[in-house]
Amino acid sequence: MSAWAAATEGIRRVRRAPMLVIGAWAITLLVSVPLTIALRGMIAQHLGDSLAADSAAAGVNYDWMQEFADQASGVGVTFRPTIIGFAAVLDNLSAFLDASARPVVIVGAASVYLLGWLFLAGGMIDRLARDRPTLAHGFFSACGVFFFRFLRLAAAQWIVYALLFGSLHPWLFGRLYPRLVHEVTVERTAFLVRVALYGVFALAVAACAVVFDYAKVRAVVEDRRSMLGAIKAAMGFISRNYAAAISLFALDFLLFAAVLAGYGLIAPGGGGGATAWVAVVIGQGYIGARLAVKLVFWASETALFQSRLAHAAYVARPEPAWPDSPAADMM
Figure 1: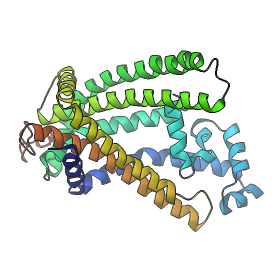
Figure 2 (figure 1 turned 30 degrees about the horizontal axis):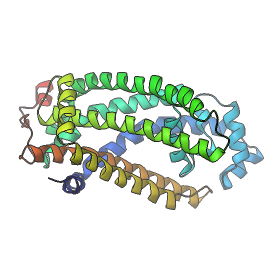
Figure 3 (figure 1 turned 135 degrees about the horizontal axis):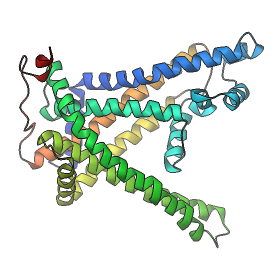
Figure 4 (figure 1 turned 45 degrees about the horizontal axis):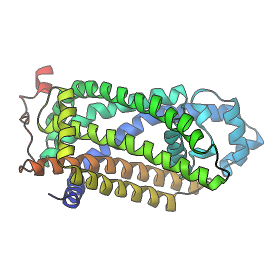
């Protein structure tokens, strides 16, 4: 199977499993709603019956948002103009490239969110690999089986990403970049050098992400218990099929970029009343599309790996049948 065929097959598999997208969107909502409620209470307390309340309700009051964020704590410090529309995407991208710290409350919420994704990942990849409905007992059985295995894999990921953000990033931008632009007098040249270093760092992160994605795929498809073995097997598969693996990642990334570009074109920049609700709907649609693209990454990588096994929809682990599933034993 070619990279293009794998990408197409990945999209088809995700389209056949809409509940996966809904489930991914639901866990995003469950994590974000408590923070939203807390932020709403802080905003209401700060505004009270002041004149700024009417201005904030009528539209985006950037001066008041800045004033609120400067005196706020916890989740309140995130309430800035950069959370509106496509600015939020650019803010997250800037924070990623510059390895900027986030408030503790956001880090905590992100950790809970990642744990939720880690739990669902096994069931999602299993469903995409089988390319047929597994029902609730089959899905959650796979989630439970692979959750603790993926926790061990996450520990390895944490070590690798800690090295990337704790060592490689400071070396690139704290030591190498000043040396490269030390004699540069043209600001444009310095900017291009920094962009090039951003590209180097992004490629390193992407390479690690691809390895860990294929490690998850091989762990699920082959029912692997050793996550170090899964990582080694993933690196072996990529090295033997590097052209297809790189091309597939490029195609999937182009799909992700298309979603970002589409959101950038239609995302409202601010406003109140009906415009605010339109912005919420468009924002939630973007989140759903972004999550669907993440599933396409997994589905297409799984399809490529299975095609090289010459066995489409092959999964080594038998699908549990009710009432023989682990969930039945717990009941």
